[in-house]
Image (tube, rainbow, N blue to C red):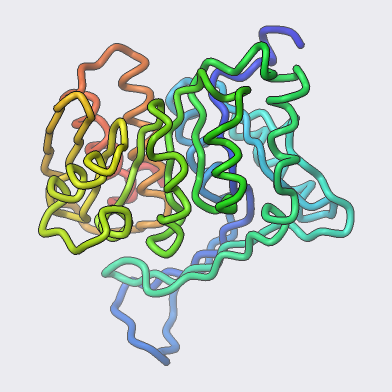
Length: 299
């Protein structure tokens, strides 16, 4: 493979269509209100890849996309975003996955993630990292790898122990608080950074926390190498096994959207670090990028 076609970061996980309904007002259960419905490329891995591409990196996505018109259309969109889709699993007869969400002025109301094709693909999404196309056990991938929590617990455990990823800079994003415990095998790898919201961090900490800083410290105490925790409009925290403890306060913004904010946060932080920013400046860059995303500045 020519160097020009080789990615510099891999994003492994959900690659799907987002169907997002938004209304400018407030909703409660049973409401039927006017608004806008968007049908756009999404999924944690793809959202992260899109943010990384927008910041000048050359990402590839490893995941599963159906071998049908919806899947082909998604692959075309992926290429247009500057993302390499060449190593996706394309299963005949399996539909392309879909995420459906409802948002109002206060943020997310409810969502359903249909990631059955990704789950069915299983370890096959890792094949390029094992067969020499992107790496192997003898020649492991050494760049950053973004992992999303939509992967099954078994697959996350496999990744944690896979020799083809032993030298990777793992960046881990849960898909939801309910899936955060899936990350347990990755906590003690020694080369993973966890990006969590407060609810996810509390799941891994094993108890309620009063702040992002408390939650991050508790997850590090469980054995994590480095943890970043967001808490909506409240201060964001970073804690590391080396004793690092930082916080940053997000600016006040009007909420235009929330889906993808965590992916934007992670991407900005990764790029800032690769560009030489120290821990405090990298955290500030991530907070600013997420705030711009939530405000709709990058819509």
